Length: 373
Image (tube, rainbow, N blue to C red; front, side, top):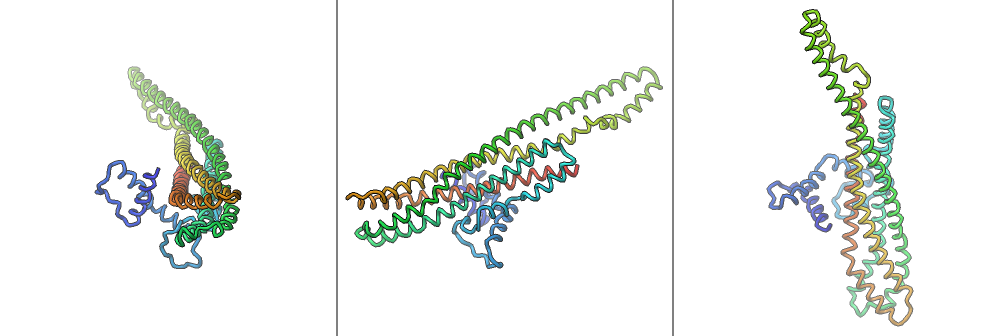
């Protein structure tokens, strides 16, 4: 996991500088992964994605200055973030699906509507988690500053009187960290909905593929039958040959005339929509699985931090001073790991946003192609 995100950060940095070159002396597997990430950050959609983020946060066209701070800290709210960055947005999706509904299959409309609803829910949940990461950093920053101040002033100054009131207030302040637990419940709900949607898409895709295969077999069988019939009539004379010629000329019209044969093109377009939606849902499920594990790991880390702080606040015997010193040591020791977990979760959330948008756009492309057909 650490290697994966190290490659992520390295490739993002290289992509910004335009130096992820094909001749780099790295292994084939790592090179491909590097290119995959770098290409993502070089795409026009990625640039537009971040342009919208900055448009939401920059006031009155203020000059843009590169900053190394977390991008999540620049977002006004989780819902605003998700709704403005979702592409295509839900109102646009609703209008387009309503327009093409008259020419499509009811089942297709229901499935695609559910697909866009599920991906919108997933994006809202990602926005919520990004906001919680921002809150985590805001609440953790005073703790880190206080500990650094105490340590820099010398271990002899690390007294219970200096840190005891702060620990009590901090333990209460960190209470909203428990919202990560509720986020895990919401994530499970979104995962269940997405998994169920994937099963429905797979089932409908198999049915559409079977129908299309049957129609194609019937077309080929009918064409072979007419060709054989035409060839056999040649022995009956010129008169029958003329009738056969008429049959051959009329063959394309005959094949396309029956409704069950004409629906082959429509089924192919529906199948393309199901393929795109199923692929996007599968990738989303994988992303949600990864994010869920990262959230659970971060939740455990926060619970450990809270347990240490509460232990200091609740203990009143003579060993409290030593316990407080041990808590300070543990928090400082885990500082780098805690911040790394926040960064990894944040990076996956942004990748999930871009994955959702890319899949939604591909599905909408197939919907528009079917609508024009």
